[in-house]
Length: 393
Image (cartoon, rainbow, N blue to C red):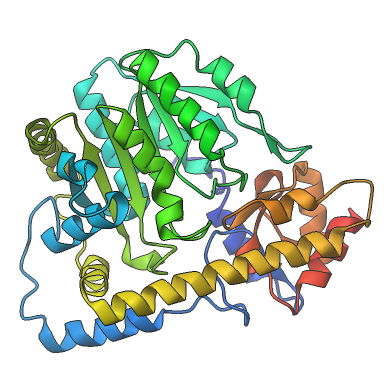
């Protein structure tokens, strides 16, 4: 069974980390995998998380199973964070805990396959996170790519996007990045989000919002605004969210899948049909990360500490965006102002693969496919080196 297997292609994101680790150079810079790093280049554990973990060690009395839905406090507090506690959307939403945002997307894909055995059309933006296409095609859906971002100018292709989505209809799924688009870093403005809501309302298609970077754009409330707008305008919406970035809980796999229905009763029925999908997949989600998040979100002091830590991470990313844009200004014919204007952890430079490999080989700067760079990997010490490498190639 295994003897004739050919070597598989490397993962487009995780493979970069493996190559980087094997590089003995002392001046190497990792701008590939999407994790937050502090000014020293380390991926820190948040102080609020450390405090919550200490509380868990002292107070947690059992490791018994919970349910396929996961931690009920975590689910309720996630609904409140995303939709506003007591709001109409909160009442129409049901949330389950998942193994990270990726787990949420895969459960959503399997759930949609259960509802649409023939497979739904899932519209994903170009560009998008490298795993989106694989998740939905593996689940048996037809993936349709729609234009989203112009790499050369660093701007949204909004009119082309809306024209490409004009033919969607009931049963179709439109994947949208709720904020801090990965990898483009460019989001629709409020008027454009309203136009997207108009389109979805008119056509009857269902949005699936990938919300992996809440708080890294303009703030927790501001970054949730687009998702809340869609949920307030539409009878049904699916939201896959993650705490990997804003709690720095990458390996603890704390994510959530939320279903918003027209009424609370319909949401209850959808939730009941969702749980068997989980049961047939991983049965129960891991508890540690979710327990940490639930304690922080439910504790006034720790919640304030966490929000301050998110604000500090966001400010550092914004600062590095501005610094890289300034360093590149006038370095060649290209205008790099778009880097400073955009939000979130990523920017897209639009580099051919041979140029990406030159960045690694000649300058020891590791970037993702197409020239996707993780802004959070920049520091005051390495940003000039990175800017020089970009200018040189």
